[in-house]
Amino acid sequence: SQQGEEDPQALSIQEGENATMNCSYKTSINNLQWYRQNSGRGLVHLILIRSNEREKHSGRLRVTLDTSKKSSSLLITASRAADTASYFCATAIYNQGGKLIFGQGTELSVKP
Amino acid sequence: DTAVSQTPKYLVTQMGNDKSIKCEQNLGHDTMYWYKQDSKKFLKIMFSYNNKELIINETVPNRFSPKSPDKAHLNLHINSLELGDSAVYFCASSHGPAGSGEYFGPGTRLTVT
Image: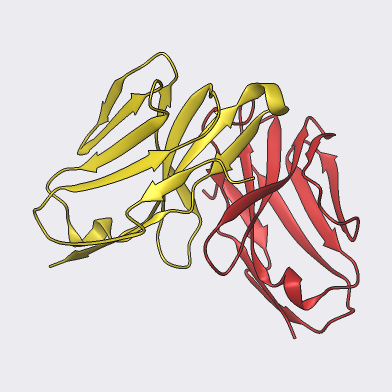
């Protein structure tokens, strides 16, 4: 069954604005990851946050994790047109044979 | 240098045919995967292999048979293709167990007519 649900499903912003995407999941996890997928391409790993971490930064990306609410958010600051892509959260559950379960993704469009 | 490569990039075939997709990673990773992405962009794991051994078979029809000749290669063979098999298939690899930061290939878009 699908683990993650992402919100919003689609987001359209202007260059320079911040973009926030949210992800909720159902079961306990070992870590949560965010991936980017440009149109017609493979997925690119952006950031991993472990279940005992609350916040992580990488360049213009900020990820938070709230295990009590089973939710995570990805913030992209000062967005650029090149950030236009689909963004997926994925949860890792080691005791199920080591699975990575993806949410349905958020389609981000950054207009120049 | 390409980290995870797949061939072919596009595959168009008729129902009932048998086809294979090849995957190679040059990262020295121990674990490799096949994922299927449907038309709504939903990604689901199909198989995972660790050092040539099957770890996960996620209730995939037995028409799908993965083969790992060595830990750098994981190929996917599909028998008796059906319309519902049309999707994008992604190969991936990771150094550690699933969820340690997967590297994905560019995908193979399979269209069954």
